Structure formats: C-alpha cells, structure tokens
Image (cartoon, rainbow, N blue to C red):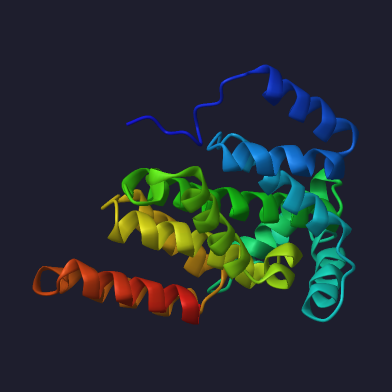
Length: 233
C-alpha cells in the first residue's frame, strides 16, 4: 500500500512551501496546514521540522536547564571515559557526548530529537488514516482527526526534547508497530526507548504481557489497553 508520508511528490505547491520555509518558516505554516488538510502528507515533515525549530528557540528552565548543564559537562568527557556514562539509560548521555564532540550546541540536539519524535508521531497518524475508511470519507474528518492527535501532545514536554519525551516518542511508535502492525522492529525500538529512560522497561513488560494474552482478548480490549498505556505515559 502506498505510504503517503514516505512518498514525496515534488509539485509547484511543494516547491513554494520549500522556498517559503527556508526563507521564513512561520510564513509557510498556513501553507503546510492547507496541504495537510488536502491529505498531502509530505507537509507533515515540514510541520515536524517547524516544531523542532520551536524546540531550538525554547528557553531552558527546570529540568531542561539541568540537562543543558549536564551537556556542558558531558561534552568535555573523553571517549575513554565512556564507562562513566554506563547506566540503565545510557543512550541519551552518549548522544550528548557525540553532539558535544562534533561541536554542536545543545539547542541543535533538542531540535533533532523533537523533529524526530514528531515524525514518528505523524507516521502513526498517517497509518491510522489509511486504515480507517470512516476518516477517509471527507477531508474535514481526517483533518479533525489530525488536530485531535496533534493537540493531545503536551507541547511543553515535546518541545524540550529531553530524555523522557525522547523515549516517549520512540515508545509511542514502537507500541503502535507491535500491537497494530505486528512488526518485530517495534520491539527493538521499545528496548531502545527503555535504554533512553529506564521507566519504559515497565511499558516493555506491559506490551509483552498484552502480546502473550492477546489471543484471549478481543481487538477492542487490546486497543483500550494501548490507549490507556499511551495516556498514562
């Protein structure tokens, strides 16, 4: 089946959005939203990058400020001292170290993580739209579904691009891939999310139990479990 999020067809409108986005991203936002309404889902990539730009501009405070201070320390660690960063959730500090050694700032790290997580989230949305005949009945219905999914996210959390929200974005996509698409790659992503934030080992255990007992549960109950899992995450 055609994957609308991966299949990018260059058109005049696409070119206009690209040029406008490169010159002034905020001005391209109405064009991006219009394309999403028209189910030209390549525009979701632009929206994900736009959210990443907002993350880049986000002023550090609270936990985000603490992570920025950690970044300043970690980027000066030698690769020979990697053992000092070994823990149950070692992936995020290692990414910090790599970005620091390359000479990239913490804001760019947040931009990368935030954009990546939104892309994963939008892939879930497109998959749901393709599989649901009711949502495909009209542009308005599919667009309303997009708005609901988009605003369900806590902006302040996703825009900061810190460890928990990084793991949560990967976890969302992993759980969807496992439960709905039966993809083995979802298990790998779920394990990666747990190595980013240790609390997601609990999610791994819950999904594992759901898969074991899925044959004794109907699909509606399974979906209710998954939805509850995502909400409490």
